Image: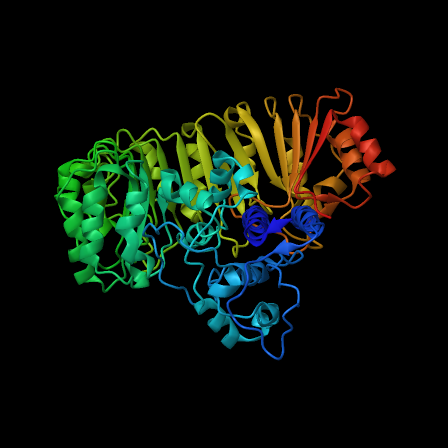
Length: 628
């Protein structure tokens, strides 16, 4: 026989596991499996003869019989969408849903329990009527507000069933509380189940070390929340745009008090929050930041950063993000920064601003620009002043064709190759000048990634890293790609090729004519339903593709860079895939090809003869996120 607290605790465990998985994996097949797990646990709970409940304090009325069975704890529903699951979670944990008003969090330690009264007593709702009230919450916003205002149990008790779970297991569960909710509200909710849970939550510092997405009310408890982390490294995000219920000066004091163990810091302010910035900045200039590794300060149209940032010392600060126009002329705390990201810009950066970045960050190896810089002097005899001082730059990412001010004369991105030995160059939405420069500059690049915006005529990508060069064609390539494919210096070291499954016939002929002697990974993306002008690669069998080193073939439903997801659940024909492997790839005889289906299903049955024939021509078949 289960006590109501054990019943509620087990349901909370199941809910936490299911909700955390649903928040991170949206695949229908995984959701169905999780629903089966949920139902299996609920069936086990149903098998109990009864669920005991503490006697209510309310006296029986004429509408309720004294011998009527006690109302049971709210059960978890069948599989629902994540949005509706949030509402159902509010039934068991009041005000946990974003749609329900939140109560003020009580993070203070609570006294030892002095009473064994049940949940029904504290809610002051007769058990016979509680289920009917909660059942109507979905359809009544007013009832939802009333339910959200109900307080949680004022005391916690031991739970024999929960004590069977070790503290390590409980802490792992608490780490995966639903990620769709904000701040630490779910941790506080779970801490009211029993004393063991409360002890695990309040005394385990790592649970509190990532402080993000706080609600306006939770900012009042920032000092208490950070104190829960003890001396562990803290990842802190402060968003003053949400108008927290705490003064910026108090937040600045909190930062100053704990700056010695803040590892990552993010500060967001609105364009008009100048006074808030002055109050908050007091906590950023008094003390050093000994373990700070990354810092982001978002303050558009604001004022320059203080030169005494972090008291001139942040020895481990390697990544810094800010607006170019806010950088001061002197800031010793940035001298060890290796990666600088220029946040959203309303205008093109100037050479002077780039020179300031170089002066502030002499160890800079990675630069991310939202817009390409303006060229003021087009004299080929002298390099731009802001770029000639980048001797250590190894990685550059810049948005090329993204002019917001109508400026047409900008620095061609690949001109940077004249002044620096780049190992990685990423060009988002490249301009025509950049595309033309590719023909003569490809030999100087070890890794190149080019991406067109989704609404452009062509989506092309060449991506990679300093060790592996990968070319990605996300749609119909343009004419300049022919020169890239014919560049033997690139193709000799090419080990990974990522291709959209639909292109023109001429593009497939051009691609199949190239030789890839070292290619061992081929990835095919299904981004959308092909148009009549495009040909699916599995149906293009007029040419042979010589890939002697190919070992891995992956078919995906999602392109990781653009994050393009098809409208419908994609499928491929197992028979067509078998023919493609045998006739086009010519690797069936070796029996060493590993096939992976990632989010893509077969048109035939998974246990059908077509799929069985496919298994015979590959060394192994792996299905991830397989659709139903």
